[in-house]
Image (cartoon, rainbow, N blue to C red; front, side):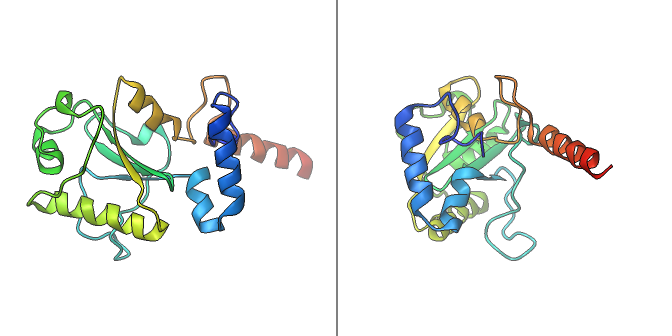
Length: 185
């Protein structure tokens, strides 16, 4: 939780205040993505996940699960960030966004269009299902490696180590396990 926007010390005070006010006033299912967003790989969307839902399995919020060849959707209850790696297959870019290179990614306004192919339709279905679950429209933002939007995307990967010397999620769990072992012995 300390890596969430409302509890980090490096964020803007307005963002932190909004986060704390919003999270404390909504139901638990709506507050969870503010603390722990959901991330899915969209470069290889299947028509259905294993459990039959439109949304595929969620990935851990760690940069080790984000590759340069992939496209990922991260939703935090308010925004849906689409991260596009630098080495994505041009065919996938064309199917999803109607562009052929990462350099053509729009940096300002972005409207997701549905193209006449299964991958584009599946992406639209996933986004619409998330919007239905959240009872919110969810603003779409395109993010790419090497600019501020890419840094925004990676700031939501709460299982990573923070630059100021904090622990990763795995290191935190190991530390807690050690403390429990010391108390038990």
